[in-house]
Each structure stands twice: as structure tokens, then as C-alpha cells.
Picture 1 (cartoon, rainbow, N blue to C red):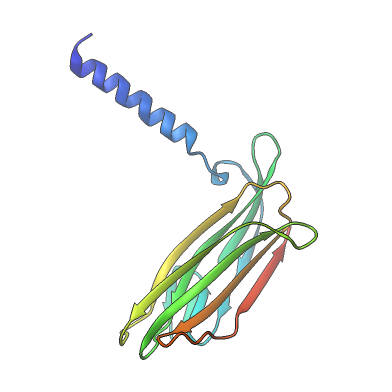
Picture 2 (spheres, rainbow, N blue to C red):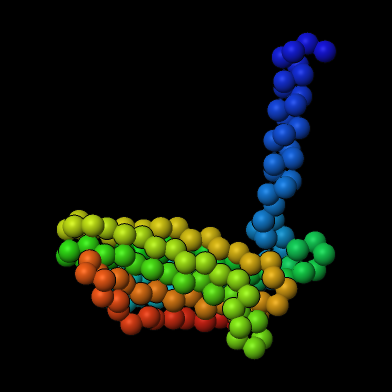
Length: 160
């Protein structure tokens, strides 16, 4: 086989293997979606646009099953840092919980700005859990100012 043809065949096989190996819950059946929206003084969670200090639209939690009927949950949306005068960070905590309220999965995302701000800053969130025990999702946001002060945490929860 010619070297170029062998490279093309090997490359195509690698692309297919990566694509099949990286299938996410998004590739499975979505059963239900719930809106997620948080608007605080400096940290917000919601849609992909931001206007007048608030997200435009909601983020979502999607509930579904994969091809073997195992449940999954996915949180999608944007974490927004409003316009803090001296900078700071917006922090989002995504918690996937079991029926007893124990954390079985989750992640923390932050977006920071140092110094004066001229418009909001955002980080896109797309966090999934394939743990079959997940029955509740809680999203919390808080603001950490430039001096390390932390605002009260604001949370919203959705139950499967």
C-alpha cells in the first residue's frame, strides 16, 4: 500500500476511534430538561447572552438515559461575572447528588477579572455525570472580590 494511502487509512481509523470513544450523554436520549437561572449582584448563571447585569435566558439541566438505560444528567449554561469595580471571580459549583443528598459527582468553574471591568466576562459550562445514583442537581454561584471576600452562596436545585 502506498505510504499516503496508509496514512489516510490510519488517520481515518483514528478519527472514528476518537469519535466513538468520546461519546457523551448528549449522544443519548434526553428525557426531560429543566431551566437553571441565578442572578446575584456579581455572579450569574444562565443563558449565553447577558444584558443589564443579568443573563438573558436560562441554562439547563438535561436528564436522560444511554443506550443501556443508565441515567445521566448534564448541566449546560454560562457562568457570568458582572462588572466588579476592582475585579474578582465568579465561582459556580455544580453538584450531582444521590437520593440521600450526598455528592456523587460535580465540578467547580470560575471566571476572573483583575482590575476595572468594561463589560461582563463569561465561562461556558457543560458538565455531565453518568453516575446512576444521581437524582438531584444543585448549581451554586458566589462572588470572590479582589481582597478575598466571599459573597453568600446562592443555589438552585432540580430533581429528576
